[in-house]
Image (cartoon, rainbow, N blue to C red; front, side, top):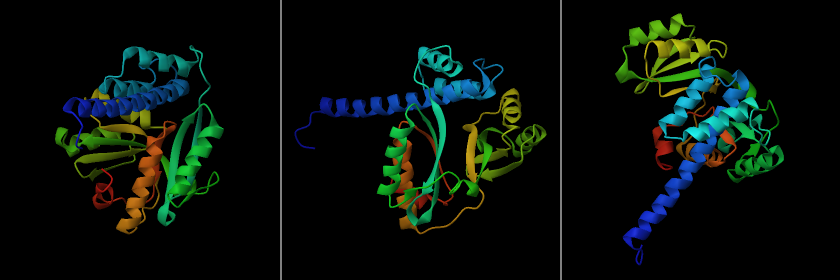
Length: 248
């Protein structure tokens, strides 16, 4: 834009980057809190916590931030009480959209998330309104370039994985919630790199929508994801590259 100096542009860009980084650190801290609260503060014994810490370290999250999050999760550090919630609702085209929430103020979060659903042309539903369309599963994405399919299949299935398939440039491994830690441990022992390893909501059936509707769903997902209290967002819509390209 005319009148903007090069240094000013850099400052604006850095400000945006710092804001994104701060939001990412906040979400990762909450992810660590959840893991520590569920399985204890020892990452050796708590594989979910170890993976959460690894994700934080991968983006250079300060060690003191990580340690503080662990202590909050175990109750060794005072702070606002965080609660896990699942918000369900309908987006554009009657798409099912679920959010994993971690908040210290459910009334505030509920009101803000409800508005995001409504601005998209959808609405937030009651518990169970769309949850029955999803299964809680463990999901790993493994870069295909780094491992042979036979080796990965042997390691994953022997550790208790339910299914493995090719998904673009990755192999997708699906596990039951109970066997997720065992599969994670097996992959780590085999020194197999994973891009994703977490508990997710997988749709039982994927639905097809028009490109226009899909783009509206993507905009809703992006808006929800930007909310600090929203940890993950899931939908049953098949979101193609064309639908997502406009929002990147």
